[in-house]
Amino acid sequence: MKSVGTRSRSAVGLPPGTLVFTGKRMLDKPKISYFHYNPDAFEEGIIEQLDVCRDLRHKEGITWINVDGLHDTALLACMGEIYGLHPLIVEDIVQTDQRPKVEFFEDYAFITFRMLYFAKEEENPEEEVLEEVISEQMSIVLGRNFVLSFQESLGDVFDPIRERIRKGKGRIRKAGPDYLAYALMDAIVDQYFVILEAFGDELEDLEDEILGKPTPANIQTMHDIKRELIYIRKSSWPMRELITGLQRDEGGLIKPDTKIYLRDLYDHTIQIIDTIEVYRDVVSSMFDIYLSTLSNRLNEVMKVLTIISTIFIPLTFLAGVYGMNFKYMPELDWKIGYPIALGMMGTTALLLLMFFRHKRWI
Image (tube, rainbow, N blue to C red):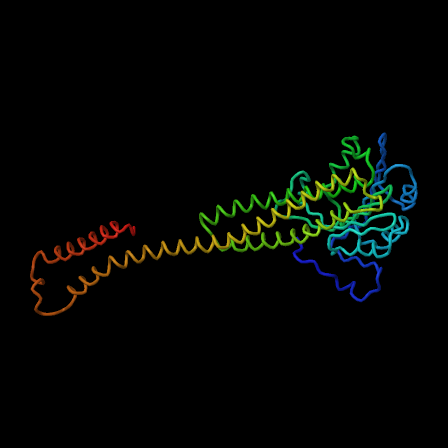
């Protein structure tokens, strides 16, 4: 994941409202899909011409238009004109380093935040790549009878919502566009839990490895996890203000029934932030555990070496005494001098081992 959000140099010094795409993911061609529904029916499709957007703009029912790919600034500018979006809003959509926020206008609200999800295997799309987390900006425009969603590339976490619209499950087709916007945000927040659960499993495995047999690679892993947690915290912390702002809407875009669901979403966001703080503390404690484990292993090694050295010091003394080349040494003529010297050495070593055992040093 991108660890730090910074404003692109290409947008510095330009007049407000200038459309400059600052993301890094570019599709060959933007994909625009739509759902149009009411309680009794729905239709979906791919939009090839923007005239379809004009028709949907004034059509009875609820319209959800999703745009994959933000590099075509001319296309987004046209969509902004069709739906009456302020040029600064379109600028925020194409500049993908925005802080999560909500802004209210007369007939619509603009919401932007980060969407996180696991990458999919190209060969097997059903399998997730746990090692790679995709982070991209998600922008939502909530109108009186429409919802526009803008994302940088193909792939998102909205498939369950699409299925609910197709099958008419739940209250999504019976409610207004505000509930649809809530459902999109809820799907993204739920994915935060999935990612944090994966981080929790990784932390448990890492902790077992550190307690068992730590390696220098563990330090790099801990740094990577800590950096990613900081980024997730940076993405999730402002969402509290965002959801609170939606709950305080007085323009009628957010219905009272939907505000109840937003309160639940707020609680989920707080839970995510608390989990991140816990994991950050766990990672910090792992550094201490890593250093303590290395220190204990070093102490064990030094303990063994010290005991060996202590045992061999008197043995070295005895060997040194009988290794001196004095002419008159009475023991040199003894036939049993060599066995006696070895016995003295063995006895000394045995007595030292018994002493260490008595002191519980070994």
